[in-house]
Length: 188
Image (cartoon, rainbow, N blue to C red):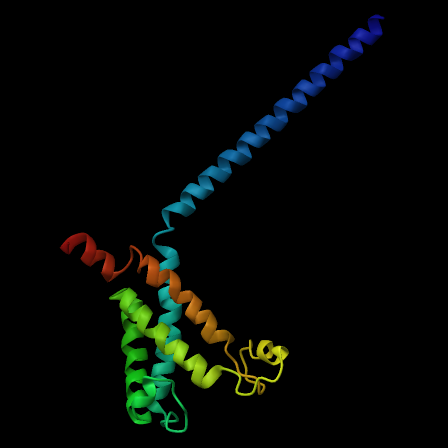
């Protein structure tokens, strides 16, 4: 009987020690997790919008400079209303300068919501005119167009990704590391 009670006492102390170790590990993990999320939350208003702005500015800068240095290929395209009221040359000049000026403004965080909306409209028109599948016979043809390179079924994946990336900037603004934020904070 003595051996049995001694066994129970030892097993209870082992369970108690194990629970204590587990509780300490849990508290350490929970504390570290809380510190990490607090650290990441400090940059939530700054870093994500800045990264989106830089990536989009780079992509639209490249497209604008390519148009500026290249030849007009808009004359052979059919644009939706109301853009169809303008000549291909006018649309070429407008889109070129919107991409160049808009990319500079995005990089600086200047009039971010305005340029996000303007470049979103430009992207929607580009998807419809240049990236959308021209001949859809089957639903599978549509999904083949969700690609980066055009294999005859369109290539609207990248413009669609860019379009999606503009939504946080349109609704949330440029973030704290921007001229928009400085204007709002110091001038208003």
